Image (cartoon, rainbow, N blue to C red):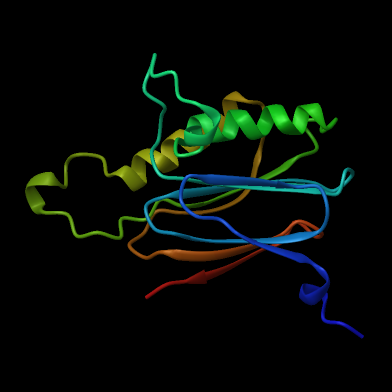
Amino acid sequence: MLDLEEELSDIYLLPGEAHLARKPTIIRTILGSCVGVTFWSQRLGIGALTHSLLPRCPPGSGVRLGDGHRYVDFAIRDLAQQLDGLGAQRSEVQVKIFGGGDVLLVSDAASSIPTVGKQNCEAAIDVVRAEGYSVVASSLGGKRGRNIQFNTKTGEVLLRWLD
């Protein structure tokens, strides 16, 4: 009998990428201050993960699809539209949010300014809710990075902390 992970496709996301899987897949990525958002529809057997670097797309920037996934707000809205197109109801989609850690040392003088990690977390939560999704799980902030593996067959996310 084959190991379950051997039967699944395996995708590794780099910063600024997103992937929607229409068949059972393990989607992996490593997050520091970046945020990863998973979307999973059990009924449709589809899942998606985005790995975004910056909180919000600059107004009037005319960002193209290929570059847009760098931004938390753009990536969430783009995946929401793709899921809508496949027939997913927003009430049935499970959303999980990870990352946004303050992995770089910040001087005391700069500590009063919100970090990119904190801004990414806030943007992800705000946009997910504004799009009508509920967050079922999250691991946000802190001082360490995360390695996540999203199984689109089961909706499970395996999280490993980085040193």
